[in-house]
Length: 149
Image (cartoon, rainbow, N blue to C red; front, top):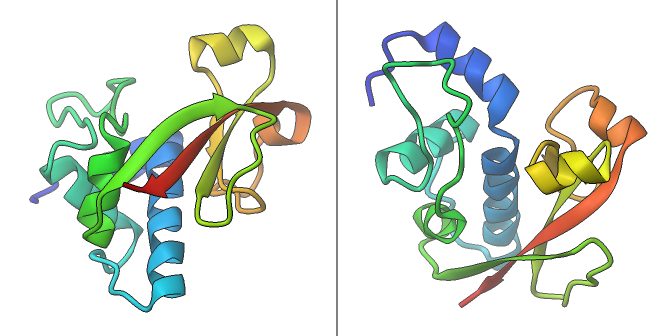
């Protein structure tokens, strides 16, 4: 991938890539737990691979496109990173994961924001932002669960 405007790419990633970075973290954790190789050298490499395979949307003609870094196929992105088939599902906030499942929390400041998809994705105990108003003042609106297919 040849990123022409790298600073704009990073700015956009900083604003919009929380779900993709949570998926990267889940894939990395899975590989570490199972002694397998993660197919990305770091977060940037993972994002680029996700874009290249079409699992992550990115409009290189408009770096301010609000859909940039939208993970269109979480299961495909996980497969790119781990080499394994995955299932991905939306579940309620009170869902208790099985031991073999990876969880991503979706935080929102209000029910209205949560219903509109306005919020922040976080792995339990791991926030990709140094400070997040959504996490410090909000609540877990829903969860995403990942499990091997």
